[in-house]
Length: 188
Image (tube, rainbow, N blue to C red):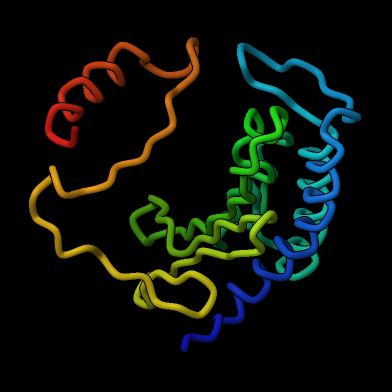
């Protein structure tokens, strides 16, 4: 059984504080005020409230760290310190359509001596199931306190592949379609 590092405990506390409100909002999704941000890209009051809760929790624990947030954008911190990358409602379209597959996603990006940055830890929390999937460099990947393992399957046809289809207007849809078309016969 793995215990969280201090950093993952801070992230876990933030997602579990924002999670109950997202669950309540999900159960009342038809009452949410929603404004269109772009093609198939929605911003809801639930998204904004979750981001505010997470920002308050994380900035209280790490006041000199920066943020890259979905709604607020970049919030500068000490450039020599890590920064949080936050999507407070990953799967907004599912959420707004009453599909219970959405999460809070938080990553930590650390500065390297060469001036680049590296993601060293992350958590994906599913409010509906109250499950936290997390990973830290050098510690592996976990769901709650259970270690996740990589499958030993070698044949692509024996594999299970899940994906989200990108929205028209987001990314290179034609490239995605070519990749999916190439993989589909191998797993069908």
